[in-house]
Image (tube, rainbow, N blue to C red):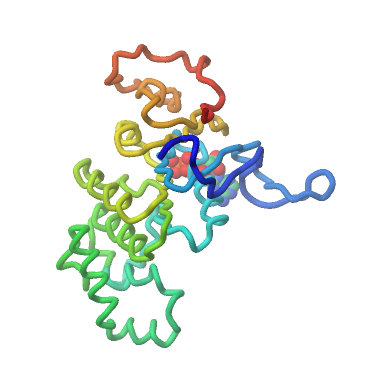
Amino acid sequence: MAEGKRQPLIAFHGEDLGYGLERGQGGRARPARVVLPGLSLTLHRGDRVALLGQSGAGKSTLLAELRRRLGPQAAWCPQHHGLVAQLAVYHNVYMGRLPEHSALANLWNLLRPLKRPWQAVAELCELLGLEGLMRRPVGQLSGGQRQRVAIARALYQQRDLFLGDEPVASVDPHQALRLLALIEERHHTSVVALHQRELALSHFDRVWGLRDGRLVIDAPAGELTLAELDTLYPDADAAPAPITSTPPLDPEALPCSRGRP
Ligand SMILES: Nc1ncnc2c1ncn2[C@@H]1O[C@H](COP(=O)(O)OP(=O)(O)OP(=O)(O)O)[C@@H](O)[C@H]1O
């Protein structure tokens, strides 16, 4: 999408994000533990954002706030999947739309799966390589299979936006590409936290990079290099070799925010 014509969906203007609540000066509510101080950024309709940063940088904190503000517009795929181990794959996926049905319908469906949702979930399971597992309790699946169930549940919600906290962390690189393609196909806008920097450059059109509580990268993926993304991981023992001929950047030289033109 052309940079100049993008329609803002949500914006932060110098806001403190974090946990807990306390009253600041003038009685203004603010987080008791601030993780991302003074955050400014805008999510635009049509953006496909890779959210990067080392462990503890604040990715989940930002996603939680986006989720809170976007509400039911956004499908959500949490980091630890949030699946019920004792329930079958079918029921875990169906849970994505639990609030849309009456308690009675949900109870009935638990005991005797309804035909229409069963078919819809079966189609998703086939797409995600989970065919034949619909009746199996999630507790008996592999880590990668559970991850795909969590993605199926998010896709089943049929929302316009997708928010994912490392939704492809437990699958092999080939599956990661397929899953990202599916997410892209079914949502006009997405924000996905991940650690695979190469994927961020090849499969997303924008990168948000967090470091030391700051948004230090906010730029189109096409304008970034792996070496620039490496600067988000100062604790890494050895940065992976960049695939471009661009020399590694001095982290100090990275601008505070790569704003839009
Ligand atoms: N419920 C909470 N209450 C207080 N602090 C929290 C809470 N959850 C996370 N934190 C802190 O907020 C900071 C950012 O955590 P966050 O989970 O957002 O990082 P992350 O980038 O998602 O990390 P990871 O890649 O390991 O999931 C960390 O210092 C963490 O300890």
